[in-house]
Amino acid sequence: MKNNSLTYELRAAIIEASKRLRIHDMYEARELVTAGGLASYGPNATELYRQAAGYVERIFKGAKPADLPVQQPTKLDLVLNVKTAKAIGLTIHQSLLRADEVIQ
Image (cartoon, rainbow, N blue to C red):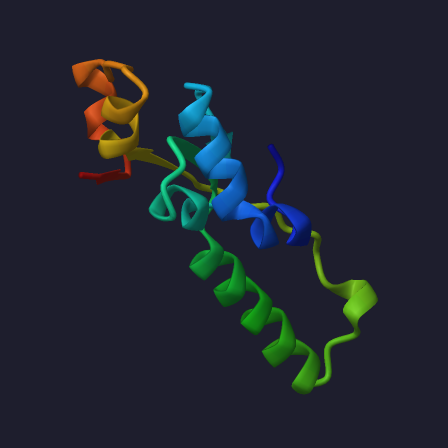
């Protein structure tokens, strides 16, 4: 499920329904996992903001926006919520517990 404003606004209801129905939910943003979702795999928002700040700085120093290169995230973070996994009866394989972040 792509993280957007509606998903974020309704996150509590979506996450609760997923748990109740024992659905293995996965999101793009770690914030939905910290709110109780099962897993996320996506770009690190802090790093994206850092990249954006670099663009702003270059523009303030006189660079033309059209001349700046298009960039994409270079690292994706895997975040797992073990508590949610247990609540829906899912066993997470030991190898996945080396994720970028594991929420107990």
